[in-house]
Amino acid sequence: MSRYYITTPIYYPSGRLHIGNAYTTVAADTVARFRRIMGDEVFFLTGTDEHGQKIQRKAQEAGKPPKAYVDEIVDGIIELWNVLNISYDKFIRTTDDYHVAAVQHVFTKLYEQGDIYKSAYEGWYCTPCETFWTQTQLGDGNVCPDCGRSVEKAKEESYFFKMSKYQDRLVAHIETNPDFIQPPARRNEMLSFIKSGLEDLCVSRTTFDWGIKVPFDDKHVVYVWLDALTNYINALGYPENTGLYQKFWPADVHLVGKDIVRFHTVIWPTILMALDVPLPKQVFAHGWLMLDGGKMSKSRGNVVDPVILAGKYGVDAVRYYVLREIAFGADGNFSNELMINRINSDLANDLGNLVSRTVAMVEKYFGGTVEGGGEDTGLDTDLKTLALETDGVSSEEINKLLLSNALTSIWKLVSRTNKYIDETTPWTLAKDEGSKPRLAQVLYNLCESIRLIAAYIQPFMPETAGKIHAQLGASDIGRQWSNNGTFSVQKGEALFPRIDLEKELGELESITL
Ligand code: MSP
Image (cartoon, rainbow, N blue to C red):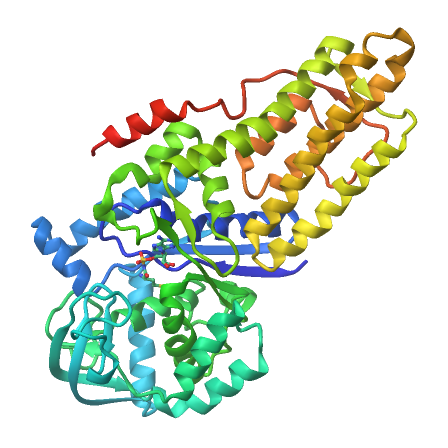
């Protein structure tokens, strides 16, 4: 049995999460579920990144002490993951005692071995991104080159991490391990960034206090990204290198949005090198879900609140939409209209109708039970071949984290199965008593193909897969085509009721929280 460790970034508890935020976690959950189905021992980590200037300011604005402020939001985030069926194994909070102790250990160790030294920082700071910038790195008009927002002058006594010392080792690592940063475009981007020269990194702040104290100099708090990144090992029990740590480190993949690749492929590996800890096997950067072509942000309307969308259309519709819409390496587009159209076409029409038509025919023509074992024709073999091939193809795509491609492959089978109904015209076969054995075989093949579709979508849409298997009365949910099974079907509610686009758009627009 292999072990598989997958992480999401830990989220800032600075407001309600939107559907774009949910993407990373839904994607990681899908991979974790797939790996478990494949028999791996999986550890799936998520959590919250609770310190830093940004959170401190938000708490001040809300008139609350920072811990009380984040506690409330963290509850909402955990609730969101419950709604979205996220099967995480551990939820880490950077305010947890064991994490705080481990960060202090890291800081002290690096200081004692000479990799952290005291100096003074003079430059710029982007609080929303929690990032230091030099004058030359700033965008036109002195703005953050990442997010375009204004930066603040920072001049303070600081500790620095000797990141520059690890530049050559990092370049060598990336060059000899082509999978370390994926997709390739991000890898190339990071390589040229690193080759242009790494500076030492400022790793402490003194102008606010909402953070982990530097243990030997407590007017300093640890830079929030150093604090946050180490969550990936601290959650496993670092620095005690036993138990979970021994079992699961190095991580198989850190799944991150494209905006935070640099932190994960420059700061994080160099810290690990300094700690003499092996590097994660891969950092995979996904694209963004854009809102009507622009950046999604908490202030741009709550219709993108995933809890509302899941409540209206079902959790699996939301999971399907985000996973399908963000293709490998690219950004996806979110609008209520796009989402509803997709739910109607892919889920209500293609998948939902396939299941309900098939179950209805088995009930109508055979009182609810069909058995396999009849003779196959070329048409049947064709369907069966694609059904089995889809397993290999979609599994391979999930292994490469090409989740949207995997769904596209599975939907080819959904279409093929719908086409099989048109080709075999069961309603015509039903008119002739002599064709009953053929009709039974056709309906059996349909059920078997749908059973496999449900098995393939299970990691993406666990609830729907369960409902389909229940409607089919499928005892076996494995991924092999069986020629001799039995289905005792039971009609259930429509999996994805058709949504009235105009009416829903109106309703969504009118929602205010
Ligand atoms: N706290 C840091 C991560 C620290 S990891 C050691 C952080 N948090 S975040 O809450 O701002 O973002 C969490 C994740 O949501 C990131 O992977 C980010 O890329 C992702 N997304 C934020 N907006 C997004 C979209 N609109 N679309 C897809 N992903 C998006 O960064």
